[in-house]
Image 1 (cartoon, helix red, strand yellow):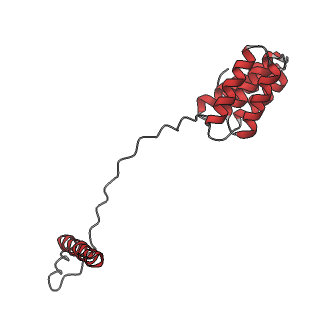
Image 2 (image 1 turned 90 degrees about the horizontal axis):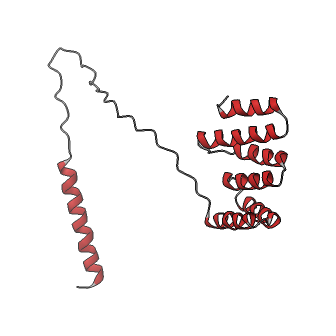
Image 3 (image 1 turned 30 degrees about the vertical axis):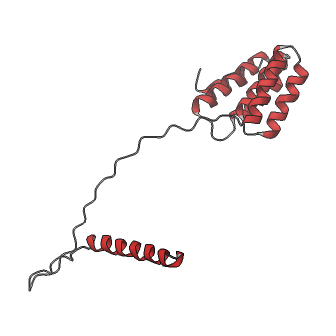
Length: 167
């Protein structure tokens, strides 16, 4: 059978099936009210929909390139090569500036270098990123508080602990 004829038959078959299904779904209009009675408004039934369960926000995982840089930086940090680790982590932040794991890793490195002010600034940036889970944000604020304590800023540490939700 030639292709155009086969195609036409398939289309006609699909149309016939669709019309058959459509005929099965017709509705009968309601009967008119008896003579002399006013027409009542159609009754509407409100069916409450079940409330969906609150969805857990998706866990964020760094993209493959950033994950590789974080792993390489950890190796360099463990070897004591802070300059290389720092370079790798800064590169990760250039690739993914919204990635809190990169900020956290660089902040941890700055703390190992006895640079708590820089570590606190990095954690502060991470704590203000959009889309963090509440427990992630709280952990970052606790880190900011620790950095501020290391700098002798008791009032700043107390403020950060309040932001973290812990006293």
